[in-house]
Amino acid sequence: MRWLLVVLSLMGAATPRSARAQAEPTYPPPFPRPGTVLMLDNERVLVWNISWLKQEYPVHRHQYDHVGVYYTAGDRIITSLEGERRASHTEPWNITFQPVGVTHAEQGASDEPLRAVFVQIKDGPRADAAAPAAEPVFPVGGPTQRLENARALVWEYGPASSVAAPATHRHAHDAVVVSFGSAGPEVTYVPRGTRHDTDVRAGSSRTFVFEIK
Image (tube, helix red, strand yellow):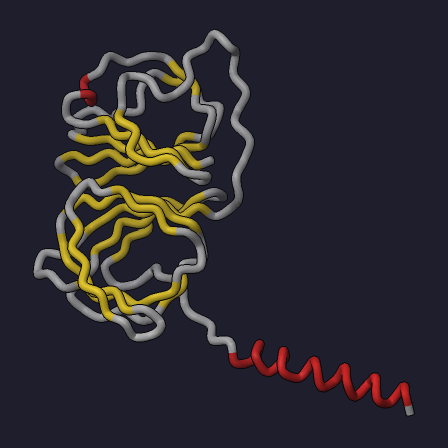
């Protein structure tokens, strides 16, 4: 009898957890969706060129940490899981970071859509690439640091610093370089350990270097 009571007790305890697991909703990833273009996909990152079109997008869950830069001004409406709607206006060249797991819905709200380039980070932190002590390590050429946290460093070469003289250097981190010129955003992936002279694309007006830790 004691054995039977133990079994029934364990079954009763397991049932609510199972029911909760079955009731837990699943949500699609934020991208792809109308207004997005996949610019780069490798083992570390996904890079998206995003336009928030004037339409409603379904509830989605961000499955990766992501970091990015907005490059046009625009409006959107963000709706939480609880149904709270929040209007948001974003100016160009704002930097964003969002951790994994955020769940919400969005809607573009301006005739000219808000646009951004987002870098989704697929995996966890990696060790820095080793380099000789005497060798210059990125950053070089005087970029402005725009963000630093446990997952990323963001540097900007603006209109003035984009003409800085090349300087041979090595990258300790994997990096995504996003350059803006007349053709729109262009993306280059720089694996950690790369040694070269410059990260600034010829003819670009702004270049952002997203170092992935």
